[in-house]
Image 1 (cartoon, rainbow, N blue to C red):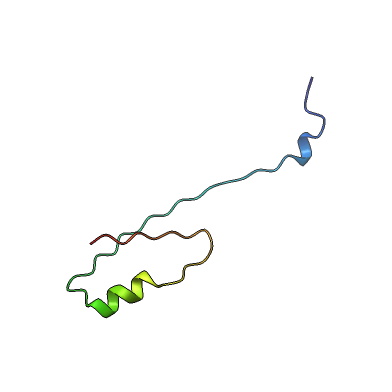
Image 2 (cartoon, rainbow, N blue to C red):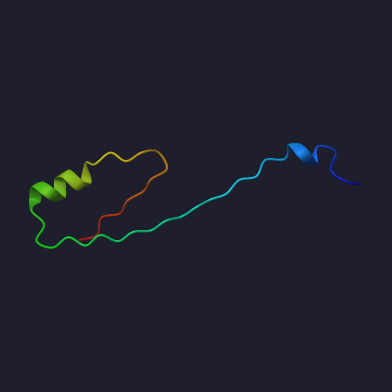
Length: 49
């Protein structure tokens, strides 16, 4: 049998974008600012030293 409510099925899509930003000669002040930076919901950032 076919799905009765086929027209009402939701379609979801996940998009992933990656960016690499390299910063050289980072000051302690800049590092602290990056750690405390508030990102919107669903956005993730990693800081590697």
